Image (tube, rainbow, N blue to C red):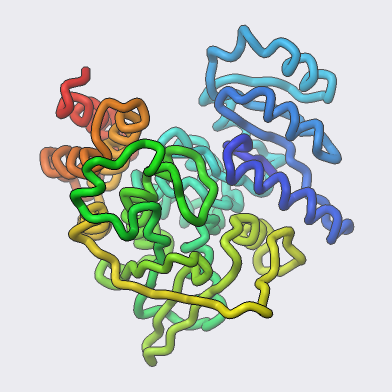
Length: 390
């Protein structure tokens, strides 16, 4: 397998899952033959040395690290790892003939080309990079049909939907995504206008990287998940709903034609959906904790508030529009989150900026990939321009 984005929260959890799988199922060995990171060479070296069999290749997407690996480079080469740099090396690792499974865990638009390479090569793709489908859902869907690739979701919500559909063996009527509500679930719009970076990063349930945590605070992560669900499961936007579930135990639900609703429940631990994507259709012991059923459970479901969290409306609009809308929304959001993380705009400016850019682009219904990438660059420039940055 290749783990792309090995130094992020999904990547490190994947390494943990693989280590556990090799203990519980010794007749079926998993080998991480390639692992990538952006520039965290120290963690890559730690992960490589902790595996039973070190990766054959290590890919660093940041070319600038090539001159400064120092001790980590020596350590990795002593382990027998080949070190490569840049986007072409990521694509090569994802499409390598010796790789059966690719874990696509690079955050954001940066993961698109390598994920596409894995899909076009007919791999099983454990997809944690939702932006691939947000930006290029129709293109990825066509590539899957042509290559026979398996696209299995790693996002806990989409994994839950996939599991519910498998359990029912029936076509769903409604997909019901659950949202934790993030750190501002009970904040007013006025309070959010003064939100600090520290408060936005204080997620009550999940431990994630800064970009995804901010997306959870604006609830644009749920907007992106609506778009992802539209392409993963082939249902229109009007067949998708979002409800707030603060405990993050019900990961999502599916309603069927007879009005039965099936839900998938588990502790909030990403190792379970990661493992299911790797071992499907098998279920094996997982390193995530069991429920403590000696204590009472509090499972709350609340309607999502689109007035306080206008990002949700954007998600449904983009899921319905398709075409170029997803690429523009994703690019604008990535740039806006970056500006907020560096203290240049307010928290509530993120979604306002995204809507402005989306409404000012010329929509195309069936664009090729190169046009989507062109609009990605345009949307980033437009978002910065809106706030006075070039």
